[in-house]
Image 1 (cartoon, helix red, strand yellow):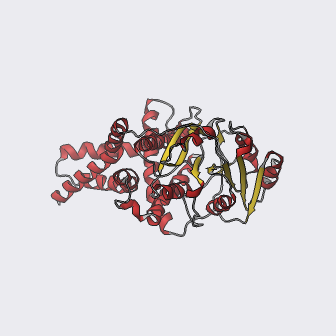
Image 2 (cartoon, helix red, strand yellow; image 1 turned 30 degrees about the vertical axis):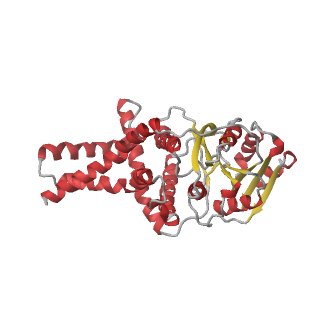
Image 3 (cartoon, helix red, strand yellow; image 1 turned 45 degrees about the vertical axis):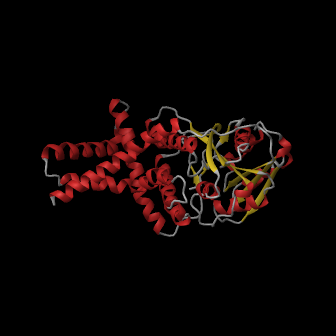
Amino acid sequence: MDLLASISFAVSCAGVFYTVAGYPLLLGWLAKRLARPVHKAYAPRSVSVIIAVHNGQPWLADKLHSVLELEYPRELMEILVVSDGSTDGTDAVAGGFAAQGVRLIRVPRGGKPAALNAGIAQARGEILLLTDARQTLAPESLRNLVSCFADPAVGVASGDLLIRQRGNYEEQSVGLYWRYERWIRKQLSSLDSMFGASGALYAIRAGLARSMPPDTLLDDMYLPLGAFFEGYRLIVEENARAFDYPTDVNIEFRRKVRTLAGNYQILWRFPALLTFRNRMLWHFLSYKLARLLLPWMMLLLFVSSLWLPWPWLAVPVVGGQLVFYALAALDPWIRPSALKRLSTPARAVVSMLAAAVCAVTIFVLPPERFWKPTQVRGAKRSQANSPL
């Protein structure tokens, strides 16, 4: 028993350390030494902007104004709003922009993938710009994304999603996970490719945008990975920016669960990710797969540490873990202080671990196909579109 506990502790401890710290450190080191620059040159091309939306009346006008203010030749832009069975005033808002070239496509309620499929089928541009209805865009975003396609190796160029922070510790907990995600994606992009894009804003060559199954959970992984396995790079363009507000913590948790469940689905739909056909196999195993396994490694770490035969090691290890989980649990009731600076990251980590466990259930059970309105904390718009 002592030997089994010792081996389990060593393996789980090494796995947790590698996933949380070892791989990110190696990734950052490699990205500085083996970076593959992207050849960028601005040459205007025809672009179809596709916005899939369900019941987006409160924010759609702001979104369309943002799109119309993009610094790009208007004659080369096609703007498609795909209304996914909207029952509020979404269709009327989109119709009000018809004189400015916005085309409304009405489809029966079928979920975001079906709405995007409808938009892609009718798009005429050489480049497709897919963007969620909630976020506004920086004026230079489209120009900078299109510049990336001067490099023939680039198949998908993702924008950078920035979360507006106002100092609220709860919102910092929401944003902490995304800031980590952004850093990882930038390092992968500089080496070769990410494993997806930001659904808030990404561009793809029209010939690479294939039809998605209607129950797809992550369109911003499904479409880019199709391009990846055609041999193209998936890169991030930091100077193409979308702006969002933090969502409610509970809704953000639901988003993480669905995103992680989508990772299981992606493994099912793209089994080549786990083979040597994946030229980024080591990175996929160390980043995506290890994250799905992290909760189980941490559970094994805790259980095995209870059975360690060396009290001098077992007591501080178990005690440290208990303090960590206690800080995470008490974070909502801890006032701003030095302790809060520890409890907020702990809560973010535990939230991600809990989401990964829940994601297994979401993947096994019939998936929820439809995306629903999401509340945005502190924003002028009381609701926001969520692909989740």
